[in-house]
Image (cartoon, rainbow, N blue to C red; front, side):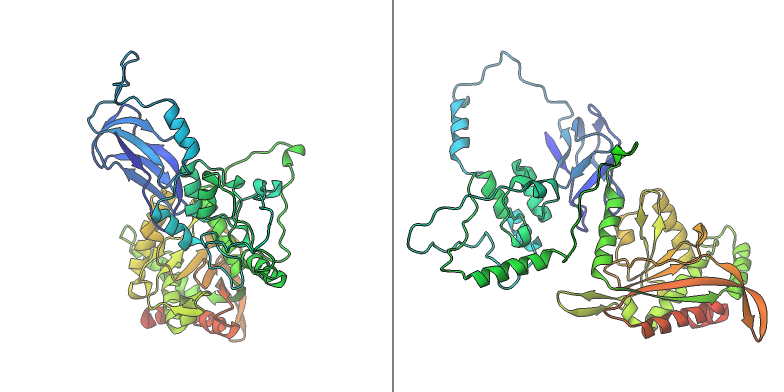
Length: 484
């Protein structure tokens, strides 16, 4: 029997939701036949079969979550389902294990050890220990000072901790699942109350957590400093999230699991808003001339690739030109290395509403492409996004993002930066407005623009110059075509 496990899909993806099964138990399949559609927090992917044979069992139903490394399908490579041994079939005495022996071995033998690869990965994913923090559980605890000292029993997890999320790395959680350990019952010894790989192994083996060092070895002040450092590394002062009330007491409710793309959006938005100091700069572009040119070309090129020519294609081209002159907005800030990474390529991400959540496919090398080619890319990426067929490669490598709420209405917006990028441009709805031109009031088509940016690496003056340059290009299609 061949057990096909959900492979590593890259980009830190740990699990996926089964959207559709292409097979059922008893089906005979060939190698590379589709098995299932699985939606991750990045995109929906079709999982092909690495082997041919007969389907013996499936992992679950549509809507179930499967983790990376979990068995998805069991395949009989011989093409026939395995037959269970007859009830009266006897096992040879030499091969028949003792009924008491496995039980005794289970009681005496220590819990299973994590594979070396998992242990190493778990350690790499754990945050660096702040200076002065308590020793990691993998280090050998110092011997106790002379004199009797009562052994300290491991602390029982509090009810509050058991009810909330447990701080632990993905590799630690995976190990806990493999060992059948409820991670909420494990006594944490990592920084900030984090459960480590060693904690899970120790719990599975029935061992106690290492006792704290004797007061004679670690001063009270030193211990207090370590506790403060661990707390500061994992918590936000004055942030105390209380459990939600039971809304069902006040009326009927409906609950839906937060999964896949929607859950990824939630994680990214919280990360961005908590980590990045957002600042917004707003301006308006007179796109009267550009809109006239765009509509004429759209009619002339109807039916041709890229012929739809939306306003977004022109804005992408103007943004790429603006980013060349404003490197800070095409960068990323590494807070750990304390350095700014300036990217010398210009890949513009486009926020797309799919109905299942927000995704950001990327127009690669926008500075080197014509407006027609950008328009063609937009058509293809938008269609893939709506059909849920975007691949991870379509959403990687973005350096700057544009979100366009104009078709949905709304005069302006304050967008959230697509971290780890440092800026995002929001487009509002083009509206006819009375404006003053050469001392006269005229009606012009006005496009509202909002640039939200990371104030750690750019200032308001930088944003004003960048947006002003975009406004200049969008207001005159001749400049846009000649200078870009």
